[in-house]
Image 1 (cartoon, rainbow, N blue to C red):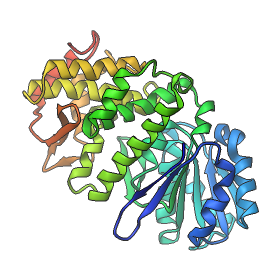
Image 2 (image 1 turned 45 degrees about the vertical axis):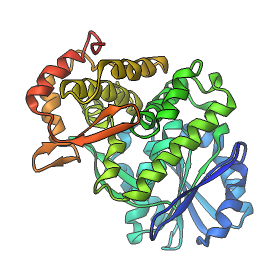
Image 3 (image 1 turned 60 degrees about the vertical axis):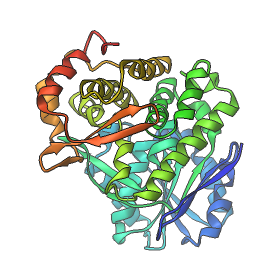
Image 4 (image 1 turned 90 degrees about the vertical axis):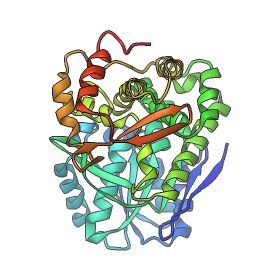
Length: 370
């Protein structure tokens, strides 16, 4: 498996390189991009232990000077305080405007590194080396960067595109199964919003709960088609003025669940899975799609070992209030992405608080209705 996909943007086009067993070639991949000599590699202790030395050795061999900054693992550390520490490291190592921030890790590392790169010296080079499935298929592509505010997820951020996204699928072998399943939520999302053939292939496949259960050909399909879907959407709408909002399918209620559980009980992919199941019920309530399609979606979510239920202890009224802090609110109305068929969604602001008050409790324990 080896593929190079292009994210075609007018001023900031870049490639997504997918090649197994190639992490040790990252230095050679960066050399032709005309980057400065200094690189600040940002990671966490777990990922750095597995892959930090491989990346450093490769970058050094290609003539780069590498410094490393480690941040704690976990969504709850995705804060401005963590960004300040990245700035401190950049200052300590005298990074210049030609220098590069390299993210080696999952979505949290990538989001924070990208935001730091966008704002340090008004913008330095940025490279994504994702090590989780979620980051590979979603977070590393498209240029969304940012951190959380105590009252909401990703409320502070910037659009800032990387110079390269470099994916070595072999690193998924050390990914915990729960984190792999979290990435599968985003893959299912692409099937629902954009790629019905991908959805059908996932339905027909065997077990999907661990990378070790996937045939290499299916993993290739998942990576290439998911990245291509994201590249296609971002290429048409870089800054989410319209179409790109569909990439937030499942995220609206999912972010509320993450926020209200303190980013500790439910991880991002689990939140998205719950949000997709709830969005399916909202779509049924608005007569946008049918029960049979909702059953297919929820069966695939369950097949990957992901949840479909909003935690029973969450207060529906508190969830509705949290939705008002969502980035997609316009003129006081929350915009939802809702499915009309497998492979197609619409953006609507017609989900009223009254509808939410009916659907949210129905999607708590017991599970969402079939």
